[in-house]
Length: 226
Image (cartoon, rainbow, N blue to C red; front, side, top):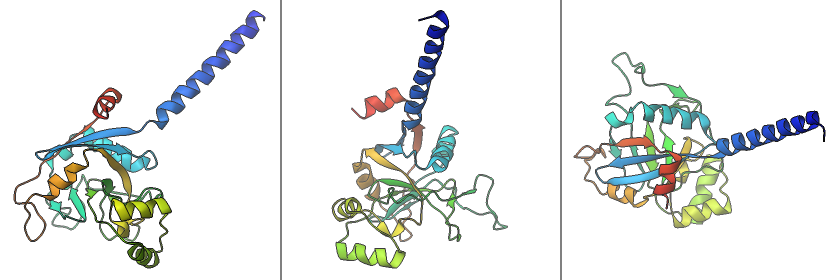
């Protein structure tokens, strides 16, 4: 092989290696850790919802959520938090930190127990609030109940999703209405601990449930998921 041919081959192999490394990196999921007085949980963020994922990570790195609480705890439904005391100012306009982002609905991402999703108001576009998050507690459903939800909401549950809703539980009526962008992968019992706190008639906890959220490094993820 000539020197020129060897040089071209080296460049080609370097290019391929770079593409492989880039593709591998792009496929890696990012993980976050939520800590509360009741304990921690580890959440995997979905690459299939990049806008919601990146918005969330940006707020986490800015320590936005560390100044908020889980302000509504509805056992058998969802655990909601992340917002300041009021979404709106006196003029009924969004506060500076509040924005809307377009939904990223994906039939494969559904409201199983432990799912992380973005809240919203009743806007017709079903756009998410950038700062309002919730984690699904939910309950189990029968096939008859799932059939009724499918018909009412024009949905289709796969066999695997039906099995999950029958055995693990979730909130299937929210599917394709609110964007799911992650799921708990360790510490599912955290949900039980949070939903066990005492709440008032409006589902607000008697004692504030603070949160601290951090983005985990690959090394921290490997150690946490051992």
